[in-house]
Image (cartoon, rainbow, N blue to C red; front, side, top):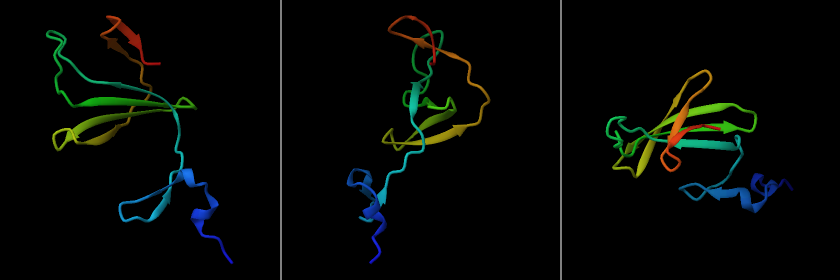
Length: 103
């Protein structure tokens, strides 16, 4: 008798889709992230309140850059992957009141 695919995986990695069908969560990568938004340098006010950027840095040092654009009044977001070579930049840390490195 052949085992079902879902029986090969521990219960804690199995979830259900919207239709109730089982599916497993498979790791793509893990690591660190940075999230920031944009403000007007003259006033300090946010330019687009719900728009932000996410930079993901996986365990191997591979960076993935996304713009998150709000949809439906900020209840959902459209992620747009940005193709860049090397992301060398700093961000303003409002609590420390200085520019800080991403990583």
